[in-house]
Image (cartoon, rainbow, N blue to C red):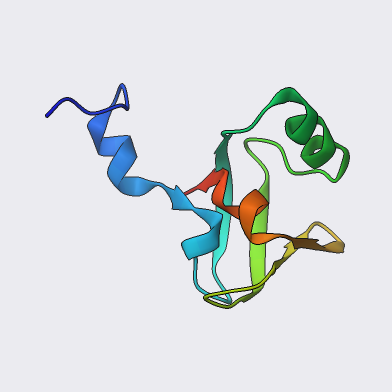
Length: 85
């Protein structure tokens, strides 16, 4: 089976934000969304290369992340589109 990632090793090192444990510090690798959502996330400081800390992330419901000095609440749909590592 051919991997959808150019570098299969990178695919093993990344995961959607929705699956990251509370208390983890991760870096945003990519955002797999349309232009509108990418612009919305960029306005909140969530762009590839940004380090974030997961404050709260339950199996259902929103995720809470810390970006610099701010805390941001992301819906489950948004957090599944953010690839972190």
